[in-house]
Image (tube, rainbow, N blue to C red; front, side, top):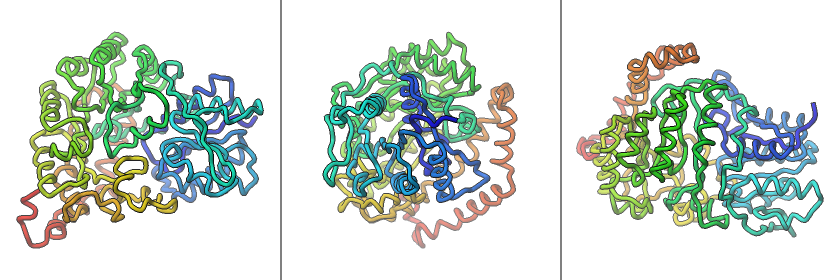
Length: 517
């Protein structure tokens, strides 16, 4: 079999994620449409195999060498950095002669990290990658001048150089549907409660927009889009294109539902209405959910969404303190948050409230305000997390001093990072409370029970939906494994037992500490 022109690699660090890489699927479809032979390396071991990262890395290295592409592309978050560098160094040591190109959030924020060691990476793609990657490949094929390719970084004179920023593509309808045919989509269609959280579902995430108009300090998007020259940050796909993609997913892959992963899906009320009418006209009969900003949710669109099969709306509440919301540049207040939840409840939506502790300058009073406010909102699902400053965010630039070294990027792979403070530079709050203990208490009180039994309640009350699905046997097996697997049942009983014993661990002998939260 002929070697591909371009091999795009999903990092082994994401091998057990329930989400595929949007970046790789869009890059692949766009480059393939231009006549190049493209493949995606996306190893998805079954959970029962329990393979560790080193085994997955070695398999990835072998696959790259066997395929021997002319161009090798990686997508990279900060958590992927160490893993990707090991793979890139290994294939270089084994004699790989192709061009190695890396893109994504971390290369865009920190291109210098990829040129510390000479001879590993050839190019970094900065920001949105489709047109940049195509231009780079064509220029190299034609032996042209790479300095004329906007939006890249490359090694030069012992350091690195960047070309001019690339303009964002305003009309994103020029991009074909994601290259689902280049991955084993069935691996992502296993029943999961992680797509629409706490609903057991065979489905996929989709994007209908790119960009976000907000400037939240904990999010990397403001920095990501700032690398490219364009005033219009948020761009939308036409509704016809989105519905065409959903029809393909329904007819070819038999999805039962989908999750709109846009940052601001409901920005335009008329567009939401057009989308909902299109779903009904095409009779796709899919359940779905979306995340959005509380300022962008209205009574009218709520009614349309409910009629079109939307079952859950997820909001970034983050804090119950107006002062903290202002510090985080959320662009909203508790009044608007309450209004969005009131609308959701009135229309019968399940709701999810994303909530943060360890927010910048957070006091004990702010923390209590957040917990009390969350209870007043009455979300179906509480999702508490510890605010962690990610590379590229305003929080990281302001609070993480000194910055992490390249070796310390592995901290972001530590499974405890959203449950406790694993590095003192990540402590953003002003109070001295033990953030890890507070998180454990909030998890036990508001999240533990719902995580295991909310999905069961939804399943039992929607038996007709599951019974008519082509995935019904998969749902039955997933249900039995989730709720009646002996090992898992014993594990849950053990966790529940220790949660009862955890009161003293969290609060010592002072019951007033627990009452305050």
